[in-house]
Image (cartoon, rainbow over all chains, first blue to last red; front, side):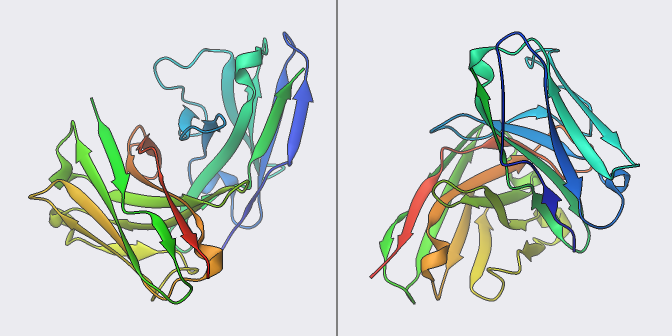
Length: 111
Length: 123
């Protein structure tokens, strides 16, 4: 079984760039796709990145995803930060033993 | 437009039971796997379980935390998925979402989410 570990919170100023990490505890980060979900207060999650680095239609290209096998982690990068990006972000992956696994979530504050 | 509407949440005593429903529309429900994900107040998302389609033998899978207590079922004639929760514990208190896979080619990510229904387990 594996876990996905995210920083509890990050903060950055409008217009800047922020990166949120998601580290896989065991097994290769590259073995299964990583997704990223955005959840604003009081709302259901929405997908911002799927299959490591794919953006759904309607998600701005300010959002990008990547994986790094050397650190066994995935990253969500948001550039040109806007106040509307303030939300909780969750990474998620899968394997046949642990099934569907979410990271603990990262609270992004844009101040 | 895909819609998922959960219902059936409420207050239940520890050790009690509750059955949640997820009414789906806007897509071919019978051909889709359906999942349940929960979120305790102020906490993160936790996958609960999944039921596959008839073509995949209605196969179910559960998180270790609920296995043996929770059962997922579906009624394709009613376009509805269910989550039967038995032997409820205080730690099962959460908003329960039903979700439908999408985007990912192998069905392991979630595209559509309901608004959630709150389950409170308390004496």
